[in-house]
Every structure is written in structure tokens, then in C-alpha cells.
Length: 130
Image 1 (cartoon, rainbow, N blue to C red):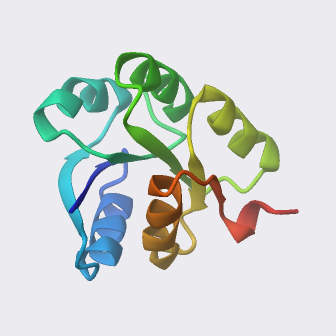
Image 2 (image 1 turned 90 degrees about the horizontal axis):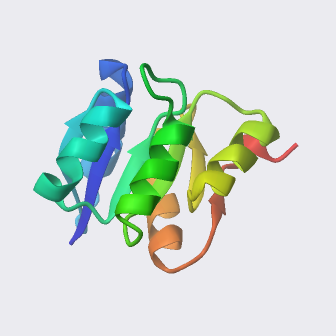
């Protein structure tokens, strides 16, 4: 089983991602967080393989949270999950340590992104490739 934790300050996006992953037999959503600090606190409790990380959150955005997460838990993979389609934002997430970037416009893309990231590949949503 692949354990996924979803970090997003908007409940509707947490629910959409959960629903998209629910139909995947090999993926279980082990936790939800609404902020970066909450995600960092809950990782030891939930032991995720992957964290879906929103970019625009307060008080700590997803880029800063990813940097801290990777420093503390280097084996946990991060996939940026955002409405933002600007390539420079995706690049900042990758520089922070993310292994993937998926736009929120297509939550059905998440399972493919998770599989590729766990296989050691980098995943970039088609919506960002301009």
C-alpha cells in the first residue's frame, strides 16, 4: 500500500484529492492537514510515503514546508498540488525538494503522478508545460 497525506488549506481540494485517490486499490489516504506546520507535526504519526502539498498556504507556504519536510524526512516524497500553472512556481517546488507537480484542474492525474514519483521519476503536470 502507498500511504498518502494531503496538505491543503482548502477543504474542497482535500476532499477532491481524497475522492480521486479513493478508487485506487493500492493507495490509502492516511491523513489530511490544512497547513504546513500541521503537516510537519503529523508526518511521524501518519508515516506517509507521499505528501500532496498545496503551494499557497498560511502561515507557511508549500515551498517552505517542502524544504523543511525534506530536511526532516528525506525519504518522504512530495508532490506539489496547486492551481498555479506558472512554470517558475513548479521549478521552485522542485528546487525545494518536490518530486512532482500536479495542477488541481485534473485530480484524476494524481494516481499516475504518485506511481511515477514512487518509481523514482519526476512528474510534471501537462498543464504546466508551456
